[in-house]
Length: 139
Image (tube, rainbow, N blue to C red):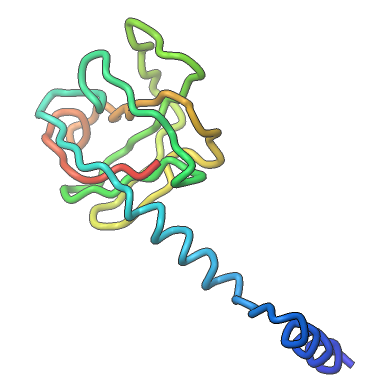
């Protein structure tokens, strides 16, 4: 009975001219499109936030999440997102950090609405804030 339902669905899609795309293919396509718009960054030794100073990045419709890819060693990172820019930037409290491994895309904050201002905080540990980093952000 289960296969009959799939057959009816497949025939129905062919009749109306719709091509079914597996959910995994759709998700992979969305991720690829998100990462195609990535922004490169570097973090200096001792720098605790990216972008540095009073800079912010702004979420877009390219990605549903804030994603990070590190070319350097993995470290603990979190994204702080706001509806408006806050000057000076708020302090990065020592909680809710995500481990971001080296050479792998990682969601640092999920389901962030478009138009939110954000920056990354690096946890102040010997392998985090004290060393330089580089990579990409997709948002």
